Image 1 (cartoon, rainbow over the protein chains, first blue to last red):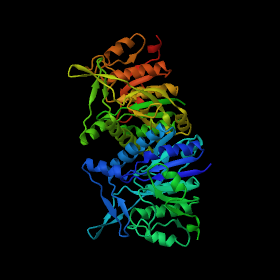
Image 2: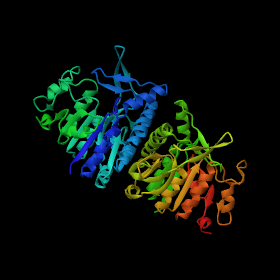
Image 3: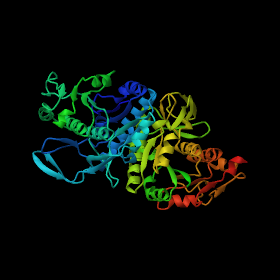
Image 4: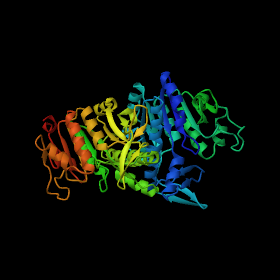
Length: 275
Length: 275
């Protein structure tokens, strides 16, 4: 009986509901499955429709994140916790899965710290943002997740997380999934999105890293650009936390989970971080 | 150790977050609390902002409900399950309450039946609507609620419900709260909104029914108009299901829950339905 954490991205063109029949099969086979999802595309669409288009913060190191003021956080909750989470739970129930949709706020599952001052590069100038409601997951409370998994239920988890003081914060869902997999002692973490895996050259789909081990970890870190930086960081954090195996692969279509478990995409071996 | 189900309405001018400190006090005192909330005003605001204003169905009998096509249901999920549920959970956590936000879909808590053909009176003509995604709660699965209450957590529940086939449906939150209170064998059900209670004459705030018993139940049923019809029906259903006491009272402001428990508003006694 393996514990598998599956993160399905929220980018354009990904419909996490397509995974429902495959997840039903895993649960029937006795696996313990936790699903984590994003919602960035639906958030962007909603923000745009409401006349508040999304803004991206670019750190001096090139890392991208969503500018999250209070109104953005509310729109984020509507898209992630309302639309995406509940339509996914609905699809899972339709496939016979006893799904339970939760955010990181609920039962304090994802306790995080809020970023202090953020450096953002805007038109060549570095500015400091102090009121941003984003941060990172520092600890995972698995008590409710354990109860749900023991009952054969599938937790469907999504940001935001919450600070110890009870403030909702936007966190990266890949790294939150990694922290969850580590806290649960998961056998596998699958990070599925609209890319094949980690590429040596983002412009060349043939340049896939098929496996990342001790000898290629540095190269993999260097090759990751944009959103892929967080995925590689998530893979490292999960492995360092004791997760058996991490795969960065493609979401969508029948059999996507089986293909990723079978090694399609980029497979990170534990030795990559133990070297 | 009493079990109390508190429904806080989603009408204009009600902020359910104001109840957080009082709920924290109840939990500290050892009470088992389930919170149910609406979200109609936020849904109307969001629907309007998205260029899809809400439409109301009026039955030949005068009962009002929200016209719920698929797009409306998605907007409903964003407002109820996203914005209202998660900001309420956030406020509760800020007040020290271990809140868990759930919809009726999650863990199949509210299993309901979808309405077949609905008769709607439009411009004096009765038309039949067949694709509406609304219905009513037929059964409540209390297994997850029991686990949460035993752990000192506060479930924060909101529509939609779900059919046995896994289709999300809009249901009346007052009656869903009543079904939940009955299934839990609750001692009390409080239905709090922006009205003082049930009035004999809706135009006269002094015409409050202070108590409804066997001798006044028929009169109470007749006096209820518009949204109040569902609240009186909910009170009847809760009492028939074994709930000890139902109060229809006012939400908002410090001490609103204590006032309702103290009898401010309209108190329904069990004898009202046992006569």
